[in-house]
Structures are given as C-alpha cells and as structure tokens.
Amino acid sequence: MAKPKQKVIITCAVTGAIHTPSMSPHLPVTADEIAEAAIGAAKAGAAVLHLHARDPQTGKPSQDPALFKPFLERIKQETDAIINITTGGSPHMTVEERMRPATTFKPELASLNMGSMNFGLYPMLGRFKEFKHDWEREHLENSRSLVFRNTYQDIESILTLGNANGTRFEFECYDISHLYNLAHFVDRGLVKSPPFIQSVFGILGGIGPHPEDLMHMKRTADRLFGKDYEWSILGAGRGQMPLATIGAAMGSNVRVGLEDSLWIGPGEMAKSNQVQVERIRTILEALNLEIATPEEARAKLDLKG
Ligand code: KMH
Ligand code: ZN
Image (cartoon, rainbow, N blue to C red; front, side, top):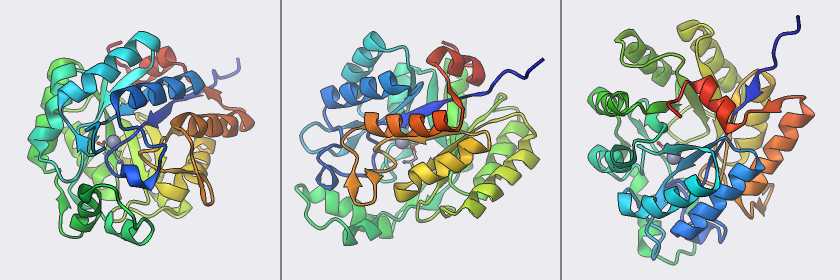
C-alpha cells in the first residue's frame, strides 16, 4: 500500500518584534491590521499563526495582553487556524514581560526560545535610515550591547507554564547548541514528544543561512531526536523562500511572514503576509507536497484543539 503523504504545516509569523513600521508600510501594527493580515494568511493556507502585538500609536512591540485580545478574538471568529503566541516578545523585554500573553490566553501553541544569544539588529541601520519614531533607531542601535536572555531557568518557567495550561511549543532553535538544550529538557521529561522544532537561520548571533547550515541542523536533530520530532524551517530575510524550499523538499514544515522577512523578491517588498503564504504554497505544490489544514496540523503536533 502507498505510504500516506506527509502534509506540510505552513506557519505565518505576522508582525513580530524585529522589523519596525518605518521599514515597510505593509507591516501590520494595529489590532485590526494584525487580524486582517492573519486572516488573509490563514485563507491562503497557513495552519499556524505566530502572533506578537504592537502599540497601535508607535508600532513598538508590546506584550500587554489587552493589545492581543481584540485580534485574537477576530482571528478565532473568522478562522480555524492554530494560535501561536510569542513568549520571545522582543530581545529588549524581561522574561516576565514576555510570558504575560501566553499566561493570559493559554494558547494551543507558544514559541519558546532555546538559548541565550546575541541578536544583531544594528546592521539594519545601514539599510533603513529614516525612522518616524525614536524607539525604532534605539531598538536597532541597542542590539549592539544586549543579550537575548533565555537561561535554563527561563526556559523551565515557560515550559512549566505551558505544561500546566496544555500549551505546546514552537521550539525556536537559532543554533546547534539550542538543539542540545532541547534534548536536555526532553531527557528531564519536561518536553512531550514530538517536539515542534523551528530551526531559525540567518539571524546575526545564530547559525547562518547556507544550505550546509540547514543540513547540519537536520543531521543533529535526527541524531538527538530520531524521527520523533516535527521539523520546520525559518529563513530570515532573503533566505526565507530558498531555505523553506530546500527544507520542504527534505520533509520539513515551513514558516513565512513579515516577522521574518519584509520581502517577496530582490528589492521587492511583500505587500502582505498573504502573498508570502501564497508564494510558498505555490512552491510546495510545485514540489507535489500537500498543505496541512489546521485540523491536520493539530493532529501532527498533538495539540489540545
Ligand atoms: N523573530 C524570530 C527570529 C519569538 O517570537 O519567540 C523568532 C521568533 C521568536 O519568532
Ligand atoms: Zn516571534
């Protein structure tokens, strides 16, 4: 009998906390913009929506649950997509601040960043020079001296929160050592199988964006977790589509969205999250891969529903 085809989970990361409003007029900022962007992405085939919130006046990233509530309500009314709330927030925030929305809303999925690292945003000062708000320049400039803090204690606190609420995780692994940290928490019984590993390529401070980097991540994950994990690829910036394509051809799930890249082609800004989901969907279908519905993604990731 023919083996059932593995379906690919598309995650769309709608706004994030890396890019700032002056970098793209298409970056969703208000609750309505975030809701519309997320709904468009879900209609185009994203089974998972990875969500951050922003202050509607300045576009500054915020973990205030009151800013998440209106878009979460609309997304739940209008789609069946899986809600994935960030616990990474922004590298400028404390872990306590970052945990607030996942604590309040107990989502099916939340992100969990698997190690402390430098997070080099300041090279973007060379590309984007005009900023409407003071915080935008500071956000890039201050990345020279900050550490994105994710200690063992921080990770354990977030795991304990998720385990109490039935929230499972998108484990953000920006380097090989983060896979070893994840294996450590699996060994301690704090992570249930199969872990959903979001391997992140091309952030300054993490692993690079080359196919060799992707192969090294995959080989290491295979060795540490056997076949018992769900793999997903996130390529930052111009690596977004090429890395997702290579990964999908090798059996991974994929993540796109304006959190990870503002672009749809060389020098061409993506006008919406939806166009990036449509683009990766076209690529996946050209590879004869099928797209997972939210129900199928829930089954694959063993979510509470
Ligand atoms: N910004 C991405 C590189 C999080 O929200 O926890 C990773 C991310 C982190 O999505
Ligand atoms: Zn995020």
